[in-house]
Amino acid sequence: MATDVPAVKLIGWYGSPYVHRAEVALRLKGVPYEFIRDDPINKSELLLQHNPIHKKVPVLLHGDRTICESLVILEYVDETFDGPPLLPVDPYERAMARFWAHFIDQKFARPFWMSFWMCEDDEHKEAFVKEAKGNLAILEEQLKGRRFFGGDAVGFLDVAACGLAHWLGVIEEVSGVTLVNGDEFPAFCKWAKAYVNDDTVKQSLPDRDELLAFFSGNKEIYMALARATLHK
Amino acid sequence: MATAGGEVTCVDFWANGFGMRARIALRELGVAFRYVEEDLRSGDRSELVRRMNPVHRSIPILIHGGRPVCGSVNILEYVDETWGNDGGPRLLPRDPLQRAHARFWADFVDQKVFSTQTRFLKSKGAEKEAAKEELLDQLRRLEEVLGDKTFLAGDEFGFLDAVLIPFSSMFHGYEQHGGFSLETECPSLMRWVRRCKERDSVKSVLPDEDEMYELHKKWYGISE
Image (spheres, rainbow over the protein chains, first blue to last red):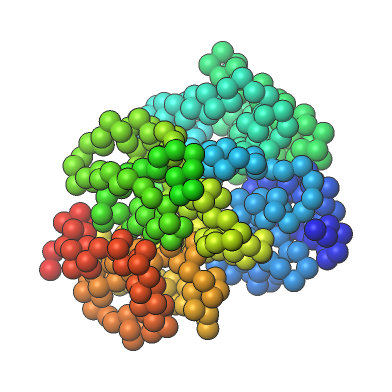
């Protein structure tokens, strides 16, 4: 499997955990790539041309091939390039990794997000926090005392869960809501630390102070959106 | 061979489009399985579903050698990886790029088509008209994916066909609800539907379209 020809490019927005997923996958496989920084407020023709359906990042360009959707990109990178496998080898373990990755993107995401950005005195906030913590407990259980979801090394599910490792602390700081603590979620906290300190992962984590500034700047927008989407 | 690794059970409901995907896939690969019906019309989920899928309490659930696999697309990948082999039929294409495209469009069906059709069936007036146009656009987009090919990813029936074909059991319902004809709006997609329905796997799984629409009318509170 060729790893150096043709060229690999990744269109992304700075600070996006979905983009980070794609970057880490490429780095774990040792694939050199060019990062094309796009602007979510002012999307480029390149992005719109290559992802007309969703108009979102990440978008992987591999020679004349285009691949969209971060989890689809993870699987493509795993199947195309040499290097340590991202997904487990066993079909049942693969099914579990995919199941939990989709859980994070679907059922987990909304109560998690809403917990941070609902007003303190909103009667719904408590219910969201309860649901978010319930979901965190489920993930805590999945770690089963392992260093990473994938075992000894960072794998597909760890990468899929990256937002919970690096971005979570920033969001907690900006919103003033703490969901995760070492008493309730000891394995999860250890995992988050191990993930952000991994040598390969580190290289594609956005700077924490820049993320802090970004989320602080958007706090009012997130809170307004949370109120607006409450009944959706 | 067909049951290597233990007994196979599929927990599903006859009118569940997501479950039809799993049952079609199992039949395509010649996997013998036990079908256990979960009646979605009753409010509570059975003890089996609550035990095998505690996170979502949804169906289909594939149980293989006592271990559950949940999520219809997840089940398709698992069935392909467990029972598909080089000598025989496979669900997913071999080439990584084609696999990525199949997964992208399956995600499009789940993210976009499913939520649009639900909104279309549940809404009235201007909202219903807007949803109808969106649904037709999405089906036309899938027609573009089909292009000149026999099936959605090539010459062989596979993963993406299994993902989309269950929706065809609601096409009659969409037409009645929206006052349009899919033969007129999406003729080549309808030819694809007929090709799929020639297959034993699809024929034996897709329910009667009138029954599907009647059930969904009740579910979504649609009154004529």
